[in-house]
Length: 250
Image 1 (cartoon, rainbow, N blue to C red):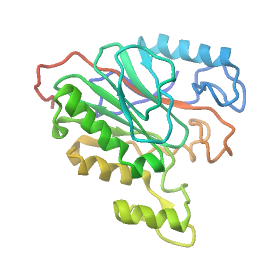
Image 2: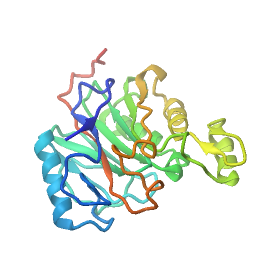
Image 3: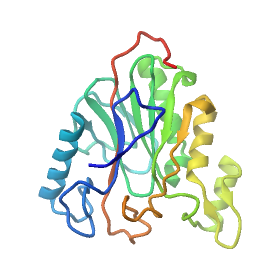
Image 4: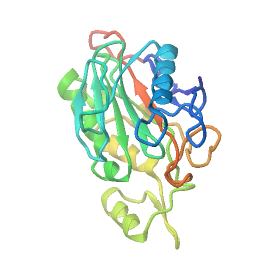
């Protein structure tokens, strides 16, 4: 099983899954972890078993609705509760979000060990869901934003994300120059979420943008836009490590 990882989050069990290592046939080949995209539920369940076996983790999952709600889950769960960010404070229980072009943001507090996984499509980005994740870690774990680490994972990049002029104007108004101009504007959700995180108090040098485009890398990632909606889902996950008593790690 291939996992993409963040160097910044190396002290935490985490990863961004790829499409490799599962049992699903085309167009969900291979490691589809999405349960509502038309794949056989038995195959999806086997893919989840493989992820659990490969990582040694259990997964706290939610039903994502492109909003900004954060929930705190310290036990494994199926995606029933509606939210777009998950906090975990229990080692062995990974907060996770499902994506296939939307931006996954993983947050971690080296002091308390608490973590948060965030799902930020364009709606969630404008709603500043990543900032809500930062706020939740402060409230739940006493984590000052300046102590947090953040990784912006594989998602559709500015190379491929054409948007309407109206949406481009909305992003310029909300988040500044994160849109490339032209007759077909291209939106940079990586830069937009970095701006959201920095405005929420996360230090710029504690944010890593992996820069992996799900639309470009056909053999590695699912892409909802590239594949016209008939595709699988990746998972971005992070689990707590044992707390360090409030000391920030290097």
